[in-house]
Length: 332
Figure 1: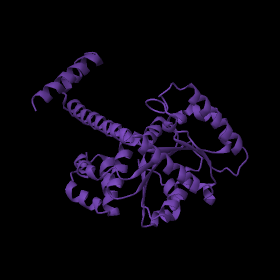
Figure 2: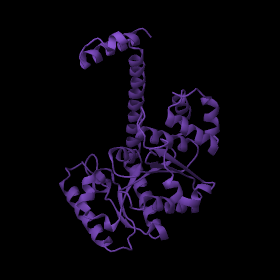
Figure 3: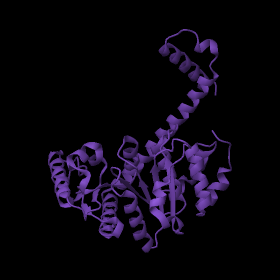
Figure 4: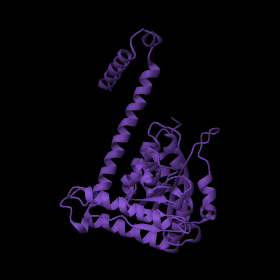
């Protein structure tokens, strides 16, 4: 862990909307500096006001361009936007590459926009946890919309998308067979689909493929499964498909309207409250695991050479160290 910092002072500055303080807070969270949990705890009561939007999909779908266009749409509505762009880790520095920020261009200079790239390097809490906590800080800093943009469709990215209130899956006509896209797990996290670069051939075909797949899935779901208890039609969300050309802002207003409609649906059906309550429990679980991992690492580092070289099987050694760990807990 890094050296401790003044969590109370930094929390106050973040709550006051200071971008530099927010940047420092996210760095402390990402690096798991000593005191980062105290920072999150102090700001916990200020979270829950921002709408969180996940944007995911395969590489090359134009997610960053779409994110930029959506951000401009929100700026026109005088809304503040925080963006967490999950980048690949640089093999040389261990930090996030700035491709997303470069693609978003002049947005980074807008006073109502805060962009943060998160490296996909491993940490005790994991990338999904660090990203959620960065979103918490943006929420506490007063940003009205927090967009979580992920690089690809791996498990970490899907975990991040699930933490959003609404998740948009972005595809392009040349992505190939829509069925293959669904096999990547995208259908499981999607609340709506966007076919970007829809001025290219194949956009209508892809839309039809997605619509057919969704109709089959809805038909096969048991009553109450998709629409919640009772499975009432008004409680069932039918995922819209929007065609956009984000580079020209075409279809972005419609995309934003679908995002608003989904959020209203979540709120009216009680799912927003239920989902956020479940998300808080996941965070508590993540925090517990992270604490346990740190304790286990301390036990491992404190183990004597005689213990480690005792010739015991890996499982017997792990059991012995775990027993020592439990004894330590009893003594505290």
